[in-house]
Length: 453
Image 1 (cartoon, rainbow, N blue to C red):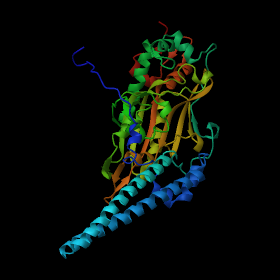
Image 2: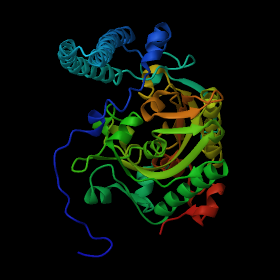
Image 3: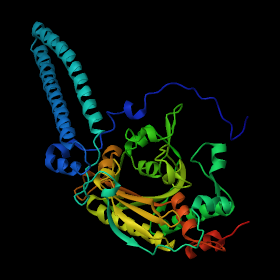
């Protein structure tokens, strides 16, 4: 096959993942200086996650000590090497050739010692880095301690729970009855957890995407359309690797990963970057499909669209100066609330406890909508401040008023995830005459009611 779309043969060879090959280039997420200078604060914050903070930090301190010892030994030998080089030059100028040759011999011995010390330092750095990769971000002071979702705190709840007509059905039955989506078609094409949308169901998906994008752009977010696959460096830089490696789809021949969220490619646009303070805040939005291998639990938790392996999502991403990031987080939460108000969905805001937060987050708010036919809350958005956890890996910095580069803060949020939004819209708006479309969506769908064809 020729022409623009032709595929060429690509060599297939085993590869070591990039994030393991480049550990010397990419730094860990937690800064060793922070752990060294504020051990009590780090221990207190990490304890909120219900993990062995004491053991993790003690081992980090031990490995950091070994690294610093190796660095000091190397520095001492390099200084001695410089002294020897100066001595050789002075002896040669003085015509003391025999003494100069002896000094050269001592320099050769020092070179061998230095080579060994460089290897020892690299080993110590690698051991420290790989241990730090296993330590999650330190939760903010306001994050509650806890282990499970039951320990999360409800911040607020908005909207009335709808009263459904007799014989109301869950969204998976409505999807089949109205011909809106088919999980069986997805099984035929791909496998379980890959829905196919049809007719008005497909139009509803497209309408929601456009609605969410338009709202974000109106709020000052610049749209990005990123690739749906990223290299290992990108997945490592935002913290998906190695923490979520088993939950990502991996194209092994090319060592590329299907994105679990647009956060990964959009944030990585700023990897290895120094931005000027005047450029902040940086606000981006993107719509992508999202791919996740996680299967979750069984039963009603995964029925229909409750948990699927591919779903569409609009993601908002921000890069902020540290002093502004918590205010930016509140602004992002308000943005998501505005979307849910416009969709006329009852929702609640949760502050996640330390044990239920994502690995990379310093604080996370979840937004859940109520699906009336199921009688349960469905998570549709997570909004997080990562502080410097991601930017330390990304080498994403901003130049402050002191003209020096400092690590920026990164944030992101779902605005919104479509699969569960669709589930709640279908269930909450079913009537004997069809499924009502919220007023705000009508200009995007072109119809006010989903009816049987």
